[in-house]
Image (cartoon, rainbow over all chains, first blue to last red; front, side, top):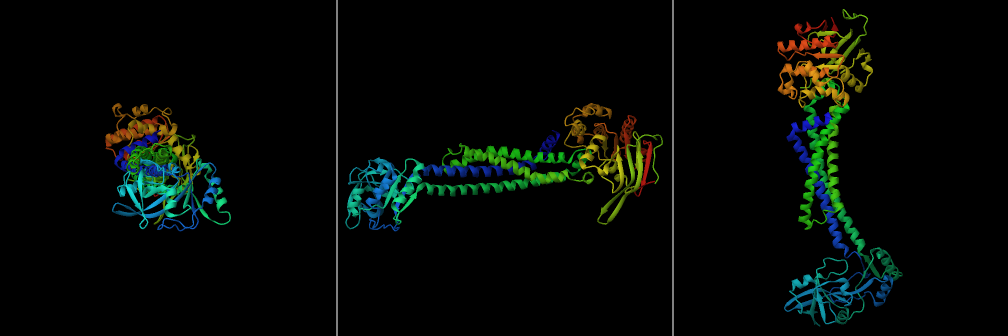
Length: 387
Length: 233
């Protein structure tokens, strides 16, 4: 159609001005899309790292203060409570945990560490050994990767635990780094057997009970069953399910994603203003031409179309270039910030490119509406007289 | 009011009728009466020159005939249509299909070449290029050499541009051609040639209205309307 041809030629005639407008749209699209991709990749990567602990219910005593000095807790979860939890949890693994802190000494290095007491047969359910073996008896301990690094612990190293009535233990295994969890944080800790722990500190009640749910759908049912059993008369334990915590974190990340996308949106608005400006200039410069084509029989709607075509062409070119560049940009941003591009090629990331391009075209169109309307409604006589 | 009637055309239906037409422009400094109670008829096939000093109302009369403006009072009929009652869309269509415009500044579209300029009104009318006259035929009819078809207006001389403009005005086979100082930007030789082209179109039955200052140009017309202070004298 001739009006499209007209728009095309005018863009070509004023190529520098048009190029600037296109660059504006391109930057806007790239910004909004890269931010979207980054946000989405962030959410995906966080949820991937967190799902491994998303199947956990953590039960802690309701008496909130946890003593860190003596290593023993005064009012923990009793053996009877654990039995109740086992019954409420069905076939899911129930892992009672002793936890405390104590002074440690390795040679002449002195420090403090969190010490966990676990039933040796439960340990493989929670933790992974990278070096050495799992503890089998009460004589050995396993150490977290960070503490091993800090104190230069090797297999066979001896650790003296406690200050007055110190006991020596040997490292039989070094654990894989686990990161921050909601249940236990073994990276800076020492894992001993439950038997050793209860004898060493003279405790019989647990500080924490972890329930690993095999099927995520059961998590709510198990959680409420435990709460019903133990907290029927008075609140004796706090029951946390990590999935709820995860959901909270994910929703926070989604808000961050929305925010970053909104920042991208601002640059798109700036691009829209630039298109608006280019179009207004075009209308002013071509007032006489508009007068001519109106007088020889061009309808208002056709003039409108001509100018909107121009805006759409600018928007389409900008969006297409922006779409391609934002794929590259998303790739770069993912690589730099997340060290992986595996989250770029999933639909929920790629859809951002489509959205970004759509926003680019719509912004251009919206910016073109007023100038085009103005052009269409010029008085032909006055427009003809315009020099 | 006196009616300026043509000499030879009694009994035929006028193609243009002004019936007590007044046009007033409201300006901040006060109202300006551009046309004051003008009545006239133009019969099909007439060749009329409109003369008069600046501000006498020539342009206003041309704008009304060209359906670019509507009268403040009185009635203007173009091909039997009362233009004051028509919507902008219909006025535009009337201009497109029945009126050809030739301007002093030629006013070709700089983005289009010669053929595209001439084809433009055709495309407006039909969407395609298969109605009305053939653009090439019209370009030959106004005497433009063949080698210039793909040139842009800026590459042509004034006389050549005005021929293209006339070809553009003719391509939808209009009944009326209105020319606003068509030779005003041309040397006298090119001007005379352009007037000969217009005269030959008049012989083929087009109604031609030319606004001019130049008595030599007015001499091509068969009737002259003299305007002064918004009245025909």
